[in-house]
Image 1 (cartoon, rainbow, N blue to C red):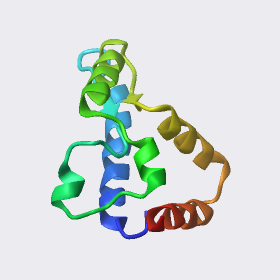
Image 2 (image 1 turned 90 degrees about the horizontal axis):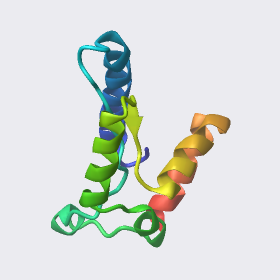
Image 3 (image 1 turned 30 degrees about the vertical axis):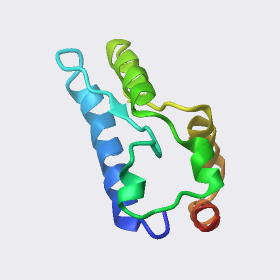
Image 4 (image 1 turned 120 degrees about the vertical axis):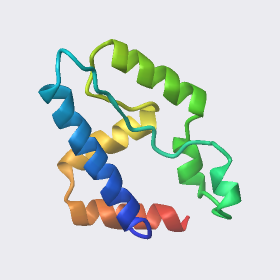
Length: 111
């Protein structure tokens, strides 16, 4: 993710770790990684970051993210991702090169 490389790398690590622990610790411990994407928390305004229209369309509320995350946890799922646009984007990256995906994310972040 251009402009957020370290942040994105940390998120990728958390996802990989959580998915591994989900298998490793089951069934004694339930692990679900919540991947909410961009959320409307007020943080962006504090950080003086203005989301593009494309970013705004993919935003979810904290309440919705919590609801989806808890439902996935209680259902025994490894991951949870609220928002249709987030799911489509994540699924679509399986068919695209990482370089193409990075360029697309860069264009989206510019507006």
